[in-house]
Image 1 (spheres, rainbow, N blue to C red):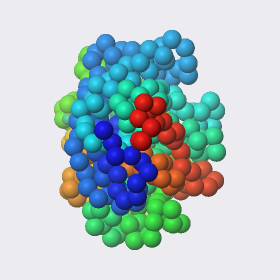
Image 2: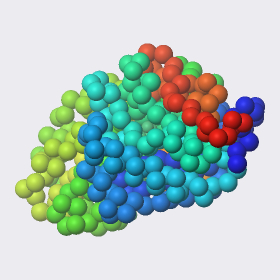
Image 3: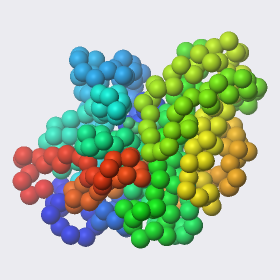
Image 4: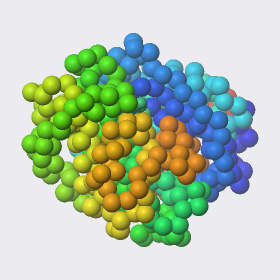
Length: 373
Ligand SMILES: Nc1ncnc2c1ncn2[C@@H]1O[C@H](COP(=O)(O)OP(=O)(O)OP(=O)(O)O)[C@@H](O)[C@H]1O
Ligand SMILES: CC(=O)N[C@H]1[C@@H]2OC[C@@H](O2)[C@@H](O)[C@@H]1O[C@H](C)C(=O)O
């Protein structure tokens, strides 16, 4: 079905991301030579069923054993089902599902078997993007920054810009699009800002059986408890110099800071914490960006967006403002990165993950039944 990885010029790459909020799998096509984005293509989404999500949840924070194996099979099957809808794909970038992330300790674990997926779909699959970076001393995350550099160029931006992803965890990439390449010194700075939607989701799930604070409805009715917010901001993580990364549950105890509050006040306070973590993170940027472009589900929470606008000194807009797709940016990132890996180009470096030298992470698995690929 694909045209092979051996060609020069742009490839039609399909990226797939199963994010920390565990809602489902995003998939998106990008045509790229690994440097320039030539075009964005089709996208698709496959939610996890309640039963599948329970299997994934049960494996969070674990490094092996039956729960992890069961989660891996859910991830594999959901991806096979979703990705088989796409035609004419040269290469797949398969992020998998992060179950555990401890870059300075046990490593990083994204489940899903890329070799199996390559065989099932008959297309080469690039996967396990983070392990090499971690083995070489990097944070293993965030990995989207090289793609954000290409996005800034694609959008024709010239001044410094920050891409802010508000998923389960928040991550920020400061980009200078005037730099000659993403590898150039001073082109990028990236790091996880702190918890974003995960604590909000966890609280409303536990107390109200809701998946999220839809439209920030509860946060809007609540009052921010400043004592809890200050305690949260005293966490040493915020003053740590980037690059730095987080596991989904690294700040799970912050729910404890709001446990005595009513539902609306608790959610308002967690929402303010997500925004304040970003404001703290901005202090680490080399220069103030001209604007912050927000991607990920958090951009759909107007209360969170208002809090960001109040605390940051520059315009804060969804990435759609420059023509990008905030639901698909991470899937597109792994399409783009797959081409870079297949072509031996770096995917992370000292300013994005803290790894001492440029790294091209990822395994390339070719389907045995399709030797031309
Ligand atoms: N309309 C909305 N109102 C409020 N919150 C929303 C809305 N839409 C999405 N969200 C929040 O965004 C979350 C999903 O974000 P996203 O899909 O970017 O996460 P993810 O990709 O799984 O996470 P990560 O980027 O950390 O891997 C939801 O779980 C919810 O908390
Ligand atoms: C270990 C891991 O999976 N990290 C994710 C997570 O979700 C958001 C944030 O934490 C970011 O560091 C990363 O994902 C994005 C796609 C990245 O690597 O750029």
